[in-house]
Image 1 (tube, rainbow, N blue to C red):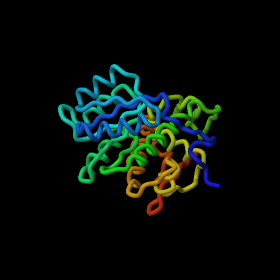
Image 2 (image 1 turned 90 degrees about the horizontal axis):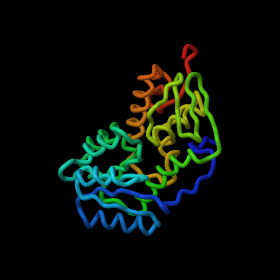
Image 3 (image 1 turned 120 degrees about the vertical axis):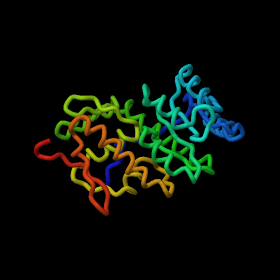
Image 4 (image 1 turned 60 degrees about the vertical axis):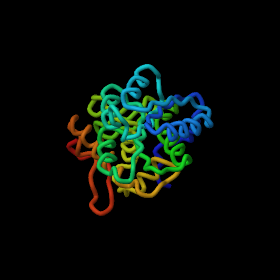
Length: 243
């Protein structure tokens, strides 16, 4: 059987979670909040970038739903400020015409994006998938060791040659699932399906951006050679003899 990114069953509930909804269209923001509250979680709404930053500073949030096209500070600028000091999960809301912004958001550390118009079921499923990745830190202790790379699942921590890697929840799970099966070639579709139980078409290229981010962070620690591209197929994790 192919490995699952989390080797134990975790049922993610949104109860008692606090989610910040950043959307300038108040009807959409309130509709999202209503669906979240139906899952017994607390929803905070912000209608522009400045409100978003203020709410983020004043509340302990478990996840941010962030529209790109918002006034005062756009979603990209808000994401930059959030990522300057936090790894809180972020789901971007984008329009179909905002392809460049989708990629930029992922490169800056967004965990995922949902394209408008979207179904509430899709949004809730993707939120649960992201929170499920982070839930690994409360699961049984497990370490993955591959050469100088050590991944502690329980602590949600990855180190290369003793140096801590700053990874988002999505990046951590991608690196973990590949490191558990060195030499195995994963297609983009396989990796995407491992990251979420409900798969939605059109998101395969997000894997390329997440892999690029991981490589960049590994490169800063002299480990960029761990993830290799298999042209026409996908990616594989491999520890070189000299690594």
